[in-house]
Length: 405
Length: 222
Image 1 (tube, rainbow over the protein chains, first blue to last red):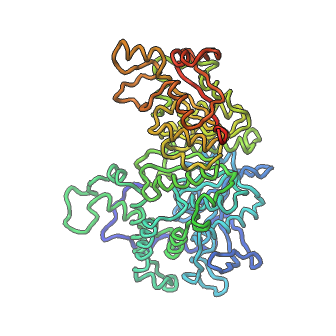
Image 2: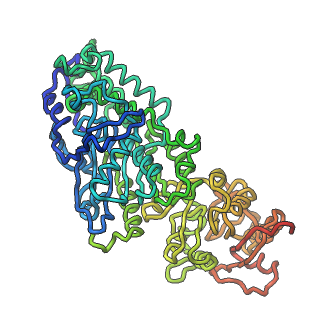
Image 3: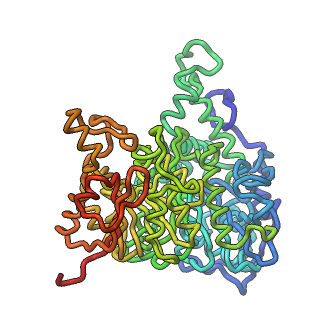
């Protein structure tokens, strides 16, 4: 978590210093890129064939001779492929440095780690911030609506391109966990094990409500310009900043906010009797909002939140979740956090019950922490220990251990 | 805190062990055919599951305590957090070859329903429990006039998780009442040694410190 910084009020900041970098990354990512031509369209759930398109991805570690040690990391809503390297726009360290790397639970000495930017994202995979080859202009709202299954379908094309038949593991938290579950439900034979963290098989009404709040904040910003802000050289940084502030509250918990900030004042002893950011928690949220808009495209935020809203695995199986996983051979580990109220333990438990009903091999651990939904991104030793043990056990079953990785 | 931990280890007197394995676990493991699929209900910190997996058995577990579950998962075991009283209904019929309830029956709210679920989910059930008819228990109530406490069951009546104690005789009667067939029954003495097979029930009920039963559904019409 970042240090609290004072932001002058009224805040959500001014034009971003990284705006050009961000726009450049959308078409020309600082990543490996898999390009798919007109002959290989991505068949979207909305009925559109997206072609041509590209997927930006990063890999860490080495693929073994059997091609049996590949782990796909699926990123969360505002994550990207830069799991374990400096971010090309912000320069900050990789978003899952705690989990991925030599000697870490997702050990790059043992496994070949792949992470791709989702379709609809803004870090190099085709999305609303990319150039539409048919017009030569940015897609904006002309980009078709995408779904979680679309994201996963695109990933299967990338995995095919990399010559990998079966993934050793698909790992993800939050929206990444949803992708991992979608992978397993849709392509069970291609997933040896699944590590699904702080997620759900469907997006709840409350979560859809929070997303709608965020989208309305973006669209209420005059600089959004009906989604064509790039034509006017603007970016709805205030609306997107507010969206991020609201979302960020849902990633934390009452206890964590209280422990971290309480009612403490920011760089002052007494209230200013104004709407300045008197409280540390206000200042912190403004900082979260402002740093986010520097690296993220507003339209992409609309598309990705929408994709999560539509997600409901059971709906594709007559409303019966167990049917999605019937006869499954994949080994599961499901992890939730006690203070996560965005994806509460009850959601994970419902998944576990469905997996039990399918006689799947499943481990389920609820980890006690007050750090809320974001706990999966933080230094939570018990979570690392469980992830490591699950992968080691699955690796033994897969014949990875002692094979030289 | 796991039920197993409360009923067995940290009492000062360790349960009887052979090569660092608990004798009741060895007995249970010996009852399970290799290559079968097993659910351990109330699996504690996974010691029995590890023993079973080391013998090529596909083991799964349910454990009530979060700490127990997390220790199991950190050992790579397929264990989920759950309650024998409420979560067994989520398992389909005939999902396992064996369902094990080790030192947990006396802590369930509805032992009869739990037992019925074990034999719905598994073709066979293996149930072990402390025998409240053990002579030391009887003596404490008869002479001491207070609820029995032993090295293996140290909790006082007001803080014990064990709310449904029974004797070996009681358990046999329950099996008969719900039409469950006993394929094998073993009583272990205070040192974890099986009592001789040819002894009468009343002797087991008096001198067995715990009972271990291999159960199966009685055939239709019987």
